[in-house]
Length: 201
Image (cartoon, rainbow, N blue to C red; front, side, top):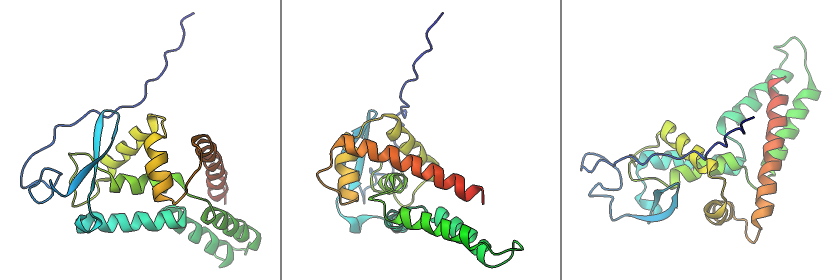
């Protein structure tokens, strides 16, 4: 009987960057001296802006939206879903008014906002703050950055993310890597139960 093959961590293949004054990546004449190396992950170098004021307007708007999500401890989409569901339970459009279900969902929202941090929102914020040398820095490409986050997660390490993200971006200090790992697992289970609850109502 052959043993099942172990899956390898997902790696992003490095893409050769375009060097042109028409492409707004880190090699653009107006940008190349305004960014600095931040960390390496999966063999890919990631950068960040030396000053927040250098962030291009389009990317800055995305950054502000992600900062709000980090503060809410949920995505904008999740927040809107809660609002719609709670409204449906109390406005009578379903034929009945169900205060119990509305209060349950409000309780979920309250619990989420009281989390130390919500991992998915922090990763999205990080994907905007940290970029590779191919990215158009005037905006934020959803597909490219989802692949970036997927690759970061697949590496299964917390070295950079623990030091830079979960401490610096969330304001948490002096917490062990083991505690962070346990926390991520518990938050994952909590969110699964809340997602199930909201989908079933």
